[in-house]
Image (cartoon, rainbow, N blue to C red; front, side, top):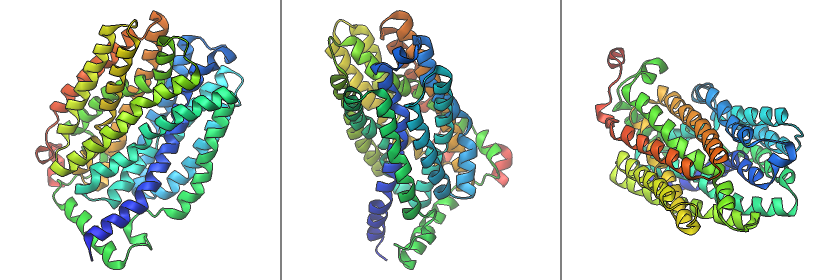
Length: 426
């Protein structure tokens, strides 16, 4: 069997499916930022404080259901779980366009978070079942590229939909593709290489042998409790919490920040300007993941980029609101630098922990990221409303990213991973 041929077949078959699925998930969580900038608050009588809480409620639901979803995906089926989630989150997204009061909107945002909670850990488990160590950072990146690429085109499309129809119609229209895609997912996806009809028996055996060989170099861990107590998992939870404060404070409020800072900008112009940081992020993510796989070094492509993002936020605060284009350029740099490390970061855990617990550990880390996202999106909105400018929120996001840099630096390399004593004799 030609291993390069096997790899090409897997990349071309699996990665478009993975990318589209996560892209649709991200579409239905991030378009709330455009509704916030386009008048949902005025139409429903939402105060600025309540608006920031509504945007953040998604992440509260997202926080609580990460680990149960990951355990189901790891022990049973990624395919079945994502199929159900696609239908439910598409329905919730469309229902957002039909709400007439704040409690209904709050309930839908929370439920949407619950439904989407399983998506990220389940997809990371799916990738770890299909891609080897030398491929994993790039594979993770093509999954997470669904985030900035979606915001890139969503920023433009949502701006046009809102201007042409309104925020309600935007939600309804953008929720439909997830429901349609659920049935494509069901037909196309298999959980493990052994189930795939598009690989030969030799190709299946060779891929599984390589994946099994990689597991042999990892210290045995009996259960999730032992994995969750490991020093590195705890540090990565804290790191991803602080990192996500910066990311989602940025994502949820960027359109509002741009609209408040730029004179006489309409929603179409806001959409185009909001898309630029995500174009830069897409390029940065591809480069960082390729270099990480090439050098087989993960941390080197995490902390320096987050440090750049932190300084960019502080720089944006320093130049002030009177220099819109300088501040905007620094926000583009911050956005690109915050997104670039995702692929290398999510390659760390499968190289530290065996596959019987790696999915749960990634879910725990991602759930702490969801909690950070809740804090970031709520507090950035609160600061913007309380102060009347984004300056204070720039400092808040910058400080959070400085903390994430420090936490990344003290994570020990995989070959020095320290687990509870009982795990070493499992």
